[in-house]
Length: 179
Image 1 (cartoon, one colour):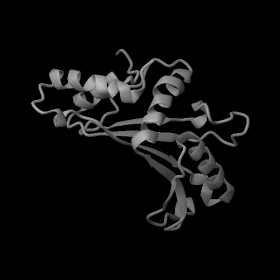
Image 2: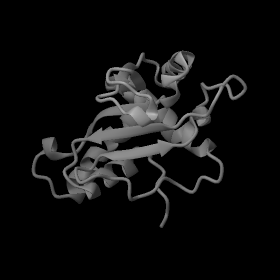
Image 3: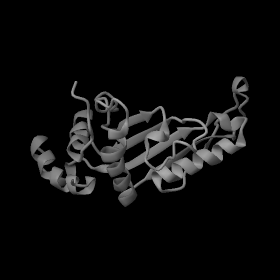
């Protein structure tokens, strides 16, 4: 099985031919992968942020940055500056390793998996994928998690249109749904 990096080198000529690019530098490529999770219960439970951070470190292989509330919301007992989430940005080799794990190990483990939706592209060809439960990743021990947490993965590309982004991710091995 080819890795994502090797698939990209094979995909460059195909993308150049498919979209009629005159220059090889016009071919879209991967820029970064951003993994984000909200830890709303950190307002009342300070231990929740630590366990969420340990899970993100296990999934991404890199320590996350704490995201803080921008403004106070009285209904949520939230004050500006309180930690409410975690995010990590993967680039280079860590990005490729994570995408290999995501495409070929994690997504096939999802129950009743029929492929990822084709509609999650933004107008610039970036793809966002959400998980309701982070325990589908092989690094997470299902018996040790306190509470299933949602996770958002954004794959940022240099594509200019959703069609370019979809074709790029398709050639890299992203399992899109058939319909």
